[in-house]
Amino acid sequence: MTHLTHTHMAAEIASIPDLTRHFLTSDRGITEHLGALLRQQNPHVVTTIARGSSDHAASYIKYAIELLMGIPVSSTGPSISSVYGGSMHLQNAATFAISQSGESPDIIAMSDTAKQGGSLVISLTNNSTSPLATLSDQNINIGAGPELSVAATKTFVLSIVAGLTVIAHWKQDQELLTAIEDLPSNFEKALDCDWSSLADHIAFKNTQQQSLYVLGRGPSSAIAQECALKFKETCQLHAEAFSSAEVLHGPVSIAQEGFTVLALAAKDASNQSVIDASMQIAKQGVDVFITATNQPTLNSIGSVQTQHPITGPLVQVVSFYNFIEQLSRKLGLNPDQPPHLNKVTETV
Image (cartoon, rainbow, N blue to C red; front, side):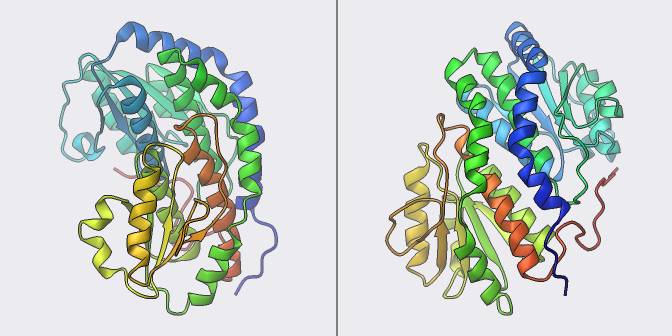
């Protein structure tokens, strides 16, 4: 059993506010340019290409584009190109390809297929000289610096910040741009949120904890996917992510007394539906922890209110990252070195 007091993961989580501040001041030109380019191109559809945490970031960007721009967004399976050798008809389309390393062969192959199919390909990478960055029509270097922990944290957040900034310039949405400028201070507040009650609960029940659910809806469902992955990666706990609506269509049947649920209630139009689903599940004897206050039968944990509904769930993931790093150490694990995983995963 390890007894770590300092980890790369903790340092990288703590760096998120300052890295976001730096990105917003240093890369303003490229995001403004891409916003103008997308207005000029006026794509009828947007596709995304990514895997792992980057795919969860892509899902967040998908919701932002669909909610703010009214343009349908589709996640394209990289194997369509790399395994099956398929082609895509993507005239009048834009593609967001997200990969921190920019080196995975299947992401590169699918991005090339999208480009050959007529799409404008925009890559979000943490390496502007990577093969993906070189292949794409336009690249955004998220500027997160080296990420030494295997579990992605700062690169996930910076990828979404980059995507939201492009969307804000695309829509010429000053309210969203102001909310993005406020993200560094909101991230700092998020680092101070107290989720110790959830950490204590899971650590106490770890010997009998079989599985848990993470709930969200809309953009927060993308964050729920990321949270579920981090439970697996850093804490060796099986977790599944569900929409608060989807969970009621079957999965709720196995949530009985002793089961644990983390519910991400965002301050947007989905808020009440997440609360209602959580209260229904709690009636089954489930221990529900929710990012909402003063909810009977539910355990409230801290969250930060942001200036725009599309940024709220992103701020919550910073609180979650802080919690999950601490939980991993509390369980005697090393969050920097999950078993059987490498920092760069190259799939074909």
